[in-house]
Structures are given as C-alpha cells and as structure tokens.
Length: 403
Image 1 (cartoon, helix red, strand yellow):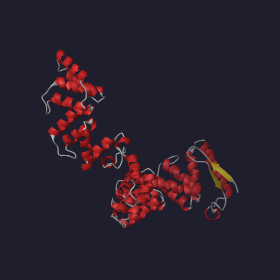
Image 2 (cartoon, rainbow, N blue to C red):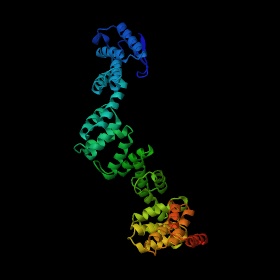
Image 3 (cartoon, rainbow, N blue to C red):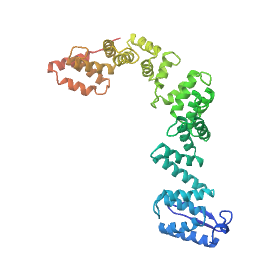
C-alpha cells in the first residue's frame, strides 16, 4: 500500500491510502493503483506550481472514477472558483457523492453550503428547503431554526408537534436556541404538557451556555419558585448577569426585590435606578420606597419622582408635582434636577423666566458633572449683563444643599 500527500494553500494535507479499504477500484475504475497514485502525484505537482486548472482536470478524472477524496477536493474548488468556474450546484453534487461514501469532511462542507444558501434564500419556503438538507445531515443549528419555524408557523404551515420534535433533537445536541425555546414551550404548555421543572431544566442548560434571555427566565423561575424552591439568591445572581444586556423588565425585577426588602439596596450602586424602573412599571411598593426617601430629602429619590410625574410613568402625569420634585431635588444637590431647573428658568416653563437663576442652576449642575450643563451655562451668560453675571456667580458660590 502506498501513501501520497496532496498539499497547498487551498488543499489541506491529506493522506490517501490506495487500496480496497479506501476505494474499490476494481469495481469502479479502469485505472490501476499505480495509475491513481501517479495522477495524484501530478495533481500535487500542479498545485505546487499553482496550476489550479490542471489540478481540477486531474481531480475531475479521479472524481469520475469514484474517488471520494477527489470528489471532495474538486467540490471545494468549484465552491471557491479555483481552477474552475464558480459553480455551487456542481460543488454540491460532488460533495454529496463524496459524503455518500462516508467522507466526513464532505458532510461538513455540505452543511456549510446548505446554511449559506438558507441564509441567502429569498423566502422562508426556500430557506426551509436548505435547512432541511442541513438537518438531514445532522446539523443541530438547522434543526433548531426549522423547529422554531414549525413551532411558530414562520414560512411554513404551523406544526407544533414537528417543531417540538426538531427542537428536542437540536437541544439534545447542545443547541442553546433550541434549549431556550423548549423552556418556553414547557413553561407555557405550548405543544407539550406544561411542566415547570422541565422548562427550568432546558432554560438552565441554555443559561449556563450564556444565552441572555434564558438567564433572565432562570432568574424569574428562582424568584417565583416555578419548577424549583424559591431562591432569591439564585434569582439575583441570574438577574445581575443580564441587567445590563437590554432584557426588558430585569432592572424592574431587581428594583421590586429591593423595595420589598428581599435584598438590600446598600449592596448595589444602581439600586435606586432599579427601584425607579420598578415604580415606573407600576410597582406600588417601589413607589412608596422612593417617596419615603424623598421625604428624607434624598436627592436621587426626589429626582426619580420628578421624572415620573413629568412623563406620567407609574403615576398620573402632573406638571406641578414634577416641578416641585425637580426644585426639591435641585436644592438637595441632584445635578440632573439642577440642569432641569436651569432649563425651566431659561424657558419660563412653570416659573418666571430668569436667566440669572438659569445660569446659577446650570453652573451648579456643571460643577457636579452634568452633561451639557457647562455649555448651556455659557449660552445663558450671553443674556446677562456683567452685573447679572456677577450676581449669578455669587449665588452659585454661596449655594448650599438643603437637608
């Protein structure tokens, strides 16, 4: 038995074992082992001198004779357009011939092409055709996407049972999207009997693999005791993983836990922002939490309530209350509210227009790092006489936060 290597930038180094164990030449080829080996040597030499057209010609001869290695390599050349015209259909045909002889690398190349074609498909129906071909060759990702399509009826007639079957196959193969979708199916009883424990099992697999939406779901299951014992520590752990990832409602969940004294605000720098989100979402305990701190002249709580009343989130919109809270928050030292008061005095919004006061509040906000405050202060200064500017600067220098 002889061994040859076909090497080069586009062709990986491979060993071809010429003999009946690899290819039954006596059944499919008129070429002898020696002829095959010689032709592979010629292909190797042609590749070394970058004569890809000759490489393709030799591989075509060997591929026609049924050699899976040649079919595989020639398929890649058609895919890349190297030495031959770019032809994906021809590439697929050659790779399928090689895969039919259990040439593993051809399977991988085919799946890659199928997925590329699925992504480039002009319609969901065309996409499904290519996904099905990838799925039949064992690609878990294709099964996951198809499963979600059949589960939801996207681009195909809805078939929840088939969707669940495909999702399960993909999930068991480790696809996190399928695991998360199965978590949803079992948590809602869609297509399967509702089973919170099983839902948590699937969500947890996806969460531990890093899927953000699954981590949020796991946190909610632990917080509410669905499918497991209630465990606030675990809930907070998972919520903290995703609170900055844009998952809707997570900061509000944390805020509600703080307002209910399930966790301590002192341990989390963003606690007040979370409680504000919870209050905006309508959590009454969070609103009371903010009001209690506002009564103690907490600047951040006062500013939060001002914003809520200004926009009408979590409370009825009320300009008068918003102004009162902004004024109190500014006096307590909130730079955001100080800038708001500066703008209100400049525009005469709810107050008598007064550029001296506008300059004072913008100056104070700028000193505390409020964005745009310094620029707006300088704009307000243009409307002041030298005497008024001196007055504004003196008032800012004498200002002290209220207690």
